[in-house]
Image (cartoon, rainbow, N blue to C red):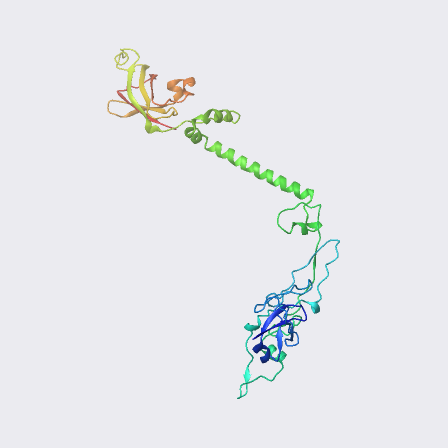
Length: 354
C-alpha cells in the first residue's frame, strides 16, 4: 500500500510505501530537496496522479539537487587596474549538494537481534551510518575535509602604450623591459648588416664561379661580361682540350730553294723561311678558349732542336684571339717561321691550355 505525502519544506507531493514508513518510524526523505520529515504527519488525500510521483511547482528559491562531489577550488581571481576585487563567497554559507534517490531505491536498514526486530537507533543515526545526508545544508558524511582554497588575487597592470611582442605576457611588461628607440635602431642596423653580408657572399660566389655559370646558362654571359668590365676581369669559356683536335698540318718552305741553297764551303744559310699550316677543329657543343700550340723542330736523327709555344695571338692575331673558338667549327691557321743557323728535318705539333 502506498501513501501520498507532501514535503513541508518545498511542497513536493509524491508517494511513499507503507512498509518503508514503518521500517523508518514514519520518517522519509524528500525526492526534491532531500529534506527528512515525518511522512505520517504530512499524508494528503488529494494527489493529482495516484500511483505515480507528482511534482508540485517548486518555489524559485528552492535549491536543486545536483550530483554530490567534493568542493572544487575556486579559480584565481583577476583584478584589473583601478577596479575593486569581487566579493568572495562566505564558506559558512557554501552550497552543499547531494543525491536523494527515490524511496524505493533506498537500502533497507540493518536488522538486529535474534527475533528480526528493526534497529532501535534513531533514523538520523541509521541514515548517517548508511551514508545519507540528513539535510541539504549539511556536509555529506563521507566527504573529506578539504583545506580552504587561497583566494589571494593577482593584479594585472595593463600597458596601453606598449606594442605587443607576441605571447600572452606582453601586457605584463614593465617599463624598463620595453624596447627603446636605441634598441630598435641597433636591431635595424644588425638586420641591414646581415642582408649586406648575404649579398656580398652571393656576389663573391658569382665572381668565383662566373665561368661555370656562363657555361650552364649561356643567356647570362652578356650580363656577366658587363659586370666584369669595372672589375677588369673576363668571363672565360670552356677549356676542354680533349675536344680540340689537329686534323691536318704541314711545314713548308717559303721558297723552293730554301732547303737546297747553301753558300760556298758547305755552310748553312744565314736565315731560312718556312710557313706552318695547321687545321684546328672544336668538336665540343659549346664555344671554347683557343689552345696554345707547341711546335717542336727536330733534325734527321729526331733530336729536338727548337721548341716554341705559340699563343692564340701569335697564330690568329689579337682581334680574332679575343673571340671564342666556336662550337663544331674548324679553322685553318698559317704561321710564318724564320730559322737562323740550324737545319731542320722534321717537326711535331701539339696543343695545351696554359
